[in-house]
Image (cartoon, rainbow, N blue to C red; front, side, top):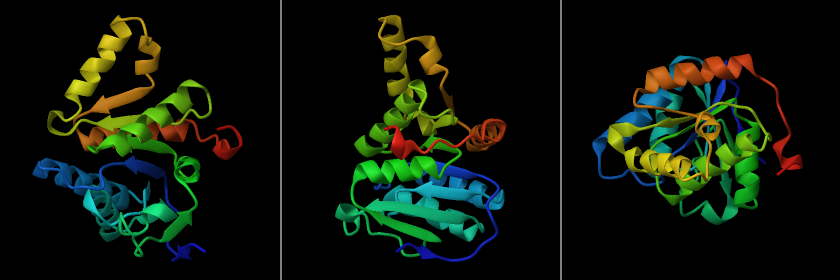
Length: 203
């Protein structure tokens, strides 16, 4: 059973993908604080992986302190490894990663990836692929903190030039270095398209 606490209904819901480690650059932690604070200060809801470790814990705590709702979704196998966050307004413990990602996607109006490792990359590319396939049409953002994603963005352009991707696919995500500009854009785009698809029925 998820734990619940009553707060006002959120104005929007943003799924944040980011590392379960803090990383070596203090700018990564600062970006997680900024994103969480922005969500809370604007009456929003954070949907994330449900852990207390690394940047995951930082964004959740920043959202909570700023008055936002926090929804965590974590598989049983990671409850101890990622230190399940009992301070979430809703903490859902699910059976596997597939169910985790589907629930996170369904509960969100938009998605943004911050610095992270292979798990963050996988979540970003999967939600991007789902959008390409028409499983959803929710906006996706990439916060490029201190050049962290420069190499990946360069490689993606190489993929376009090599004929494995089209520019239209690149247009399905928005990369930005400023959290305020990126989050405002995502929320605005989400407000223009609030259709909800039960993703677990199509993936």
